[in-house]
Length: 287
Ligand code: SF4
Image 1: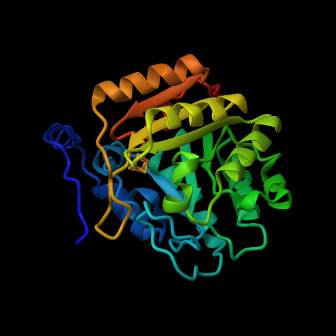
Image 2: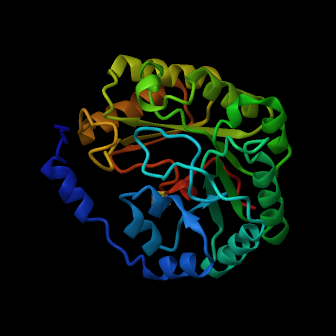
């Protein structure tokens, strides 16, 4: 029978401190027929983020062509791209009064460019309408194909985020359709194209501290600017089992070690997610 490692009490208490009314943002998302990773991934920060008027839009539908074992987003055959999604996001940014936006997507291996062109069109349209907004993209790996990657090279965005998610050793078990080296290649490609780059890992999947530090070093060697470190929370019994809950002290130690290795900014904590408080980065110049 599958086992579920229960949340420690201190983590439950910390979670209870997260307050906020997500109602208004939920209504808007529904009205505009949009998706958010906050809802699809059952993010633990949803009350806090929605309650303070923030959300991370999930574009190109809510069906992913991959099936990572940690992720709660549904997989299957995605719907055709819907160009009206761009208008709805642009309207929502105005209604929400955002000065910083994080956009992500499902992985669309069914599309010839993995959806890179759609991202590019969306960024251009947002920048046209909101010249001063901070734009952060959390992209899939586009299979590391140059023809796809280059569609975003001139996009007027502020931060290019791509999560390695875990240590290379666990890829087969956790992200069987992805490849650690491809993810590094994507981050390196965009760094060399002049972007501020960002990546993230989940901890608690069975990795060792040594493996984590080696992963951080690999990211630093390609000049990744920002790192997020958060606790993996198992969405259901069918998902990859959580092996360990890191303590607050361990998150602090990992943050300090990552900063020592050379990241410019590190966000580390049990409920840290790649988009959590993304607008608090000091690396984006406010327009
Ligand atoms: S942390 Fe990110 S994904 Fe989670 S609720 Fe906040 S904005 Fe959404």
